Image (cartoon, rainbow, N blue to C red; front, side, top):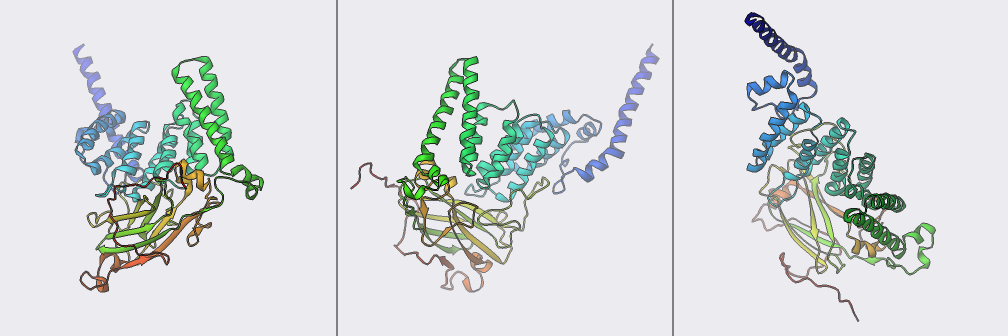
Length: 455
């Protein structure tokens, strides 16, 4: 009996070792060639027994162990160390939804400079990870929604992409009502107002049915929320003159978006120190809520367009950004009709290497990304906004936006050559309508608020 038992144990060990040899000799080479991350060794740092388990078919077990290990990297702030673990876990167990979702957030949001500006060079790879996760888990809404959210919130542009991914998410029956609702806002930001209204009616029907089947606080609140949002949308479509615009009668009515308001944009930028910009400008809108996008990038950045990039350009997940490229994006917050900001990139030379010879500095404002109280005046597509110098209709399709740009050289940004500090020359670019008004505080505390009853 003991001899038979030993024989079975020996046979089991032989099969175990044989499977490991087979996977190491045949499967591993194919995996290393086609699936292993190229930019970093995803298996670097693994113990030999962990690798043996992975190669012997215990992929899910190793994936779970690695993901637990990742917590310590998050806790210690070792974000670079988390990346190869995320990648290896998604390869070992492609059905770990939380790892895909967390990985997208980590890649897209966690890598920042000293002033908490995200390294946007990572965004294409965060989107690529989301696409891969959705492709490998088509039965659930989660990765479709997470990819749509990345487009909607982080990219905050090209809203048709957000619509596409949210539409796929709502097709899955496991989606939660609160996440289902976000497709409405994506429709609005994409300029598809009728689609938003029609979807509100669909959501209201779903909410009414859910409340009839289970009349409790949660289902009642969902029904009431959808009804309120639908009512607000219908009122705004009328008050903003959007329906009249569709009917060709916009000029005949008295709407909140008429006549167009001149935002009076102007800006001056000085390179006060190497990699440090001092920005001062005007925006003639008194209510708080305006954020103007500023972008500084390589002039020849691949896939670059007006104040944006081809964010969908990555076909594979990489664990590091293009190290030789520079792309800085931030928001200029307006208060009291002015914006004053210092942007210091000197402490983050890895994120802003400035290896190219020529750069583009861009300023951009799109009402579709504005809060509702601003859109009530400017409209869905900017029909209630104008600017005698910088209004553009060719930057975003079917939209009126504010846009201007300047060219800067590497020597100007780094204060070298003719622009070296102490030379008496400061690199300055400004719009033709900019008017000097003296020194402005970058920490102004008093905010002027329009009176409810004016003269």
